[in-house]
Length: 290
Image: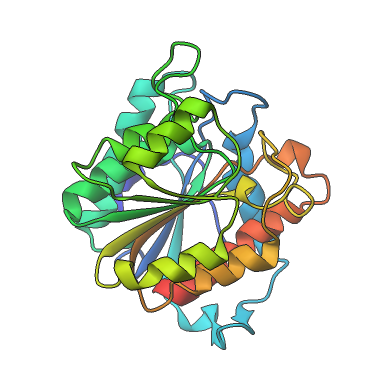
């Protein structure tokens, strides 16, 4: 397959800093998923991918942490998927199809949300490609509800659905500090949940993850709103921006096969520091995993 197979699915073009390599040559491919149809509080995350791209020119291509430079990487930004506004089921189908194409083409996908429900169709595709997949979930919220106000497909239920993709525990959750009593009871049986903390539990878990394909899904609200206010369901008490960057770099050397970053909401990001953090995270991901 080639880029033309995705062209009919992509609407708004985009350019993350320097991401203009030919698709056939690119190892990493960035794809925006501008969907926020099921958010439970403040809407606007559909504009998250654009805001991350817009500020990416403000950061250096060189990472002092890794002593690596994006100028030495071959990566492409395809832009945003064209999704039918309000049609959740059709949008999920389009997202899964796009992911399937990227995996079939041997790319390392980096997805920019959008709301967290977008991770479910992505992981449906990844599970087919990688039967031994493990999922690392960084978030303030458990996202383990069975339904939200009667709706099963919601950003509040996404990790419940992800956990159900596997016959055994495959979901590792970090930084969780919000949810219902029932969600935490479900987690004790069906996920590996680490409440409140991120870096310490992740480092303790790395040995058992070695050798398995890993998918990383990062809701920007895992970071304290003092550092990342531009998100729809802010939850005080989170990690610092430094800690989440360190956590991601600690996965270097692991078999990370895909990544998404979701829930950036530019309307609440007047200083653009949330988008800047997201752009820096994307830079570190490209350098660490491709």
